[in-house]
Image 1 (cartoon, helix red, strand yellow):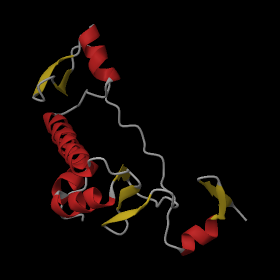
Image 2: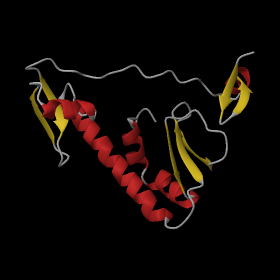
Image 3: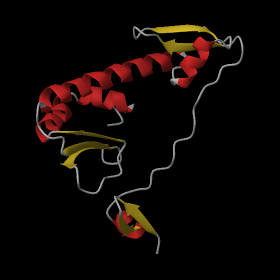
Length: 160
């Protein structure tokens, strides 16, 4: 019997499967490395998307190290939108939680297309992302900023 360890607890893999959890595959690398003279796009320090040719300068390598090299303008614009959606959501969480403990977790489960709010100490679900904050802050964000949360996850409205 194959066992899986979650937060230090051994659980039979078959039991997790019965409960509807699935094993997430490791994402395949999609890193774009331009050749010398090849055009690439990036998000500049102001959040605008720009493009230039790869000429092996430190500027190019800095962008590569930060995951800021994209094959197409659309890819760079998508990354920019996701980045700003993330900032909006996290700023709102920090504003709403105040001095409250961050003892709850907001997860988005793509296989159920739903947000889950659970106490932090519980077993984690098989989800794409988790944020920790107060219960009320997470509830507000999941109900009022759904579009931003889905955007930052890369989930389109029609997939949801």
